[in-house]
Length: 147
View 1 (cartoon, rainbow, N blue to C red):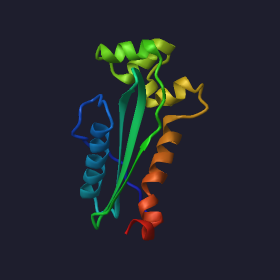
View 2: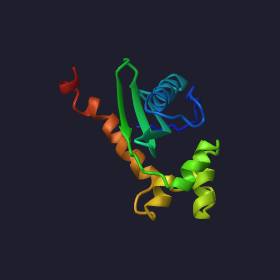
View 3: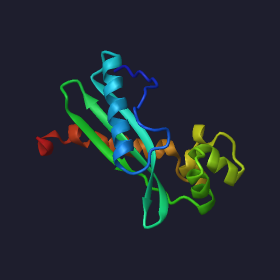
């Protein structure tokens, strides 16, 4: 097995809100990853923000595209964001810098993410995204149920 990582455009805004836009971004990244190489699977992640009952949460989606056109998708990892972060987001600040401003951290978006910052390091964005990847693979791991 060979793993190849690369950045790819998602085709969505830099701070997607709702569920549809980040889901679209993950699907676009997975498709681009598949086309960019001779891979069997293309994987794409996209983070976003979700507002529910006046509260703002992180949101993330993962898509796995297979060369035959089958796609597995999963979303979740919703973390309630503190009001000062939400105020900064509404003012147009990106999530990482907004978290840094509130926590005094540096480059949060390249380390544990908001998830790491607000769980005291008990969970990181990477671990959360690993869960999403596993859920996205369910369609392939239990293919009989999806056909």
